[in-house]
Length: 281
Image (cartoon, rainbow, N blue to C red; front, side):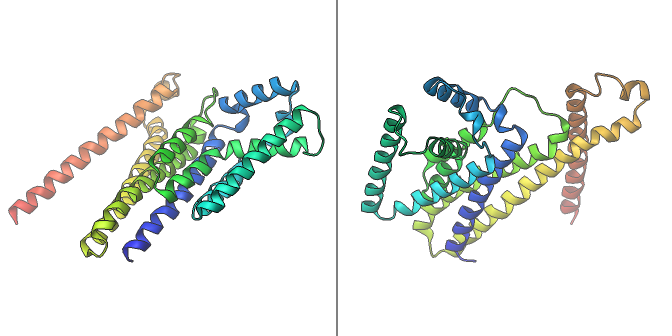
């Protein structure tokens, strides 16, 4: 695998990770519970005097697809500056005409169609911004996309252990998006200086392998740590394992802490034994 293929692979995986992270975020916190969505709903209801958002399709999947299409089209349009300028002016003009027509009760622009597209675009906005950041190496867009992925699905309802695998999947995909998108920006700039260097390709592959192993190991250990709570409940006395304190978030957090303490001790003993054998040899 040459340098260009490795960099393109980083962009492709970062794009997929961004889409997966936003999708899992909406699985963990449904759209209707999103504070951002409720804010948009209240603003639109105040403008039009009716609850139009509740009548529309609030599908997160449709929003992700619209965001994917919008971001991809923007990247392709920026290849030609004239086409980009004309398209941007035309789109701005159409949006202005739609809002003017809606306030003047002119039926040429279907009301529900434009509102539906607006809602879908709003739900997929992090995808559109993130794709531009990934494929155009824009740090500002990457930061904005990461912020929106974390904030937009956020709601007031809590989560339970039943969603632990969705949460771990979100953390894994989100961190993969952050590391690969920023890593591509960093290594693509370095490639301009060391493009034909074999050592550069080795460093790039080392980064990819290390990132994948680190994230997989961290996610796997965290998953096992939460399962360790159920393992402890079978070892401890019934009056302790059935207590309220043990079965709340506080007790589960202590179980996770105990697991990682045991892991740290085992890892330390293994490392010391390995180093001792290396010194003897």
